[in-house]
Image 1 (spheres, rainbow, N blue to C red):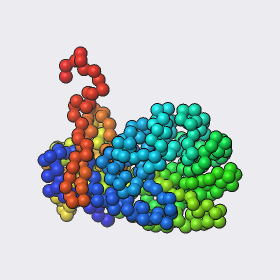
Image 2 (cartoon, rainbow, N blue to C red):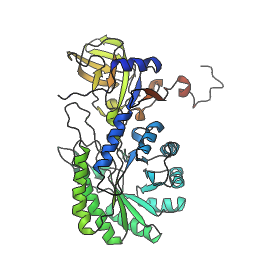
Image 3 (cartoon, protein in one colour):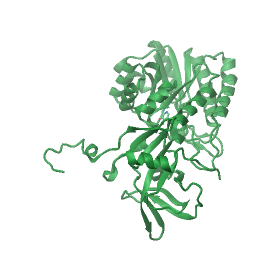
Image 4 (cartoon, helix red, strand yellow):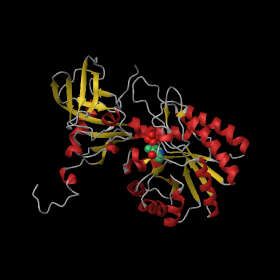
Length: 419
Ligand SMILES: *Cc1c(COP(=O)(O)O)cnc(C)c1O
């Protein structure tokens, strides 16, 4: 079994806890920047390459600003994600707007910010045109239908997914949009989530590049980019081989040369919208053991719960756990690590081998940098945690305070009630 190493130790966790009480999510700025540099390098063979970070994975303006300063754009799908991106300094074609079932107000703000709008459905051509007028550069989301198999058993059923349009609809839309003055087109598709294999992007690219050639041949449209979207996974399990972004970049390059070379379309830019891969491994949820319970099983009760990290409760996802300060102790106990929701699925780990664990220990839950804090909610009146940024010099900064009861009650008019 490979080992997963926390990016903070017990002393640092304790020092942070003194100023910013647990639970908190902490993000490793140095790790994020190094990763982003690797992504850019892996695709540097493509002139127009740009990664648009999926804001939903980690919607914090401090993180977004770090990404912007390192040449990354944003992929938004809602009004507030657009507002957040504006606040973090993004504008124009640094913004991709990939939404579905889109309210009018969202399209209007995307237009105002000058973002690239990715239409999810053929009917949205007229909808967006009436609302905002079509743009010179626009993107269309493709759904190939059928099933899509990558490798080592990874597959999904695009035919059952609500996203995107068929090839015929896409081609008819391009024709209609050209008639109305659209000059440059992008093609986008997102087929499988969290693929831990270097084959996903190259296989998706092969389909989308071939589609781009067909669209160009049938309509004469200028295809300015192909957006491979998200779905590049991370190794949540300690014995999983992580993706190698350089192998992925090379794989896409090979398909690019094979398909776009003969078609004379070598000016097509590659865009990506990775979320999980960009920040996932560089975040952790730090929580403290507040109770231990022995009934039919051994329980470790912590001060975080599923509202702070929903993935295990929602999908049964594995998140590795390290008891800080006990990294080298043998894992000779079997525990369920649980939060305080009145829901029995509020378990960060089930039957997990861990070292002997005591009240007051810091539990470090790995890989919460994407779809972690972001999926938070307030069930049972539980509150969202703080977010902390660990700078490259190991100093730390609170980049979002924890919620207080006042936040919880802020959407209700209490003038007639006494709390
Ligand atoms: C969620 C999402 C992404 C990011 O997905 P990851 O799995 O986090 O990489 C990208 N694009 C769109 C349209 C999405 O909905």
